[in-house]
Length: 282
Image: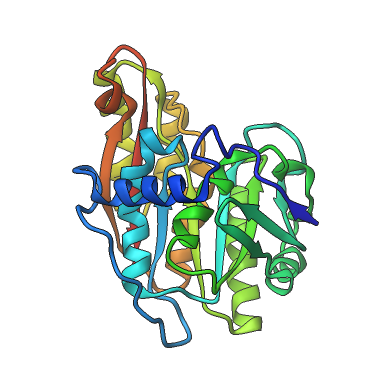
């Protein structure tokens, strides 16, 4: 199945040249890394990092996202990017794996690694092959141009989490780990999430601070507890919990928050903001 763009022309430009220029401006922005990195080559079996990035429109979160992608570019590309997102549409299953075909963006087509995707389904008690959850979901699609800008020599496994719990996160982390060991392919997990939604700037900074501290402590349990306790409207805590759990299984026991910003920092409207952050697990 060929998955066509759902949010090109809205979350990012549908014109390839305009899209490339906007990506470059995200990297060059003062909230970004300040330069456009050069892609290094990756050699080895186990990729050294996983990342967390936001998924809003590029004008709002692209500069923050560039900080996570800069870490990937500096390390070179693995064979596979496993991109895990929340499910904003309500369609599909508890864990929906897009397990065959390709995804199209204005910068070209990216093939799905069916072998890895089906391996995850095989080792999971919950995940299933499902396309419906992905057709209108934006939070994986917006990641692809950031990768395609630098190279087309990679494959993806897109996964949406319709249910974000300890059980689903642990199950998915274990399935990715076991499939990766079986296939002996290098891979990087990209956790796609925005932070709190529609708070004042002051409250967003406070509750997002709780979340970011938990992530830096690699504590997925406390992350979940505080999301519930403080009613933190972070949309992708499940993907982040999965990535922390998987990272620790792979010996990546530390993390660093690379950037944090809100939509209010971009628009100047501090009355109702969305939080964005990039982080690296290594």
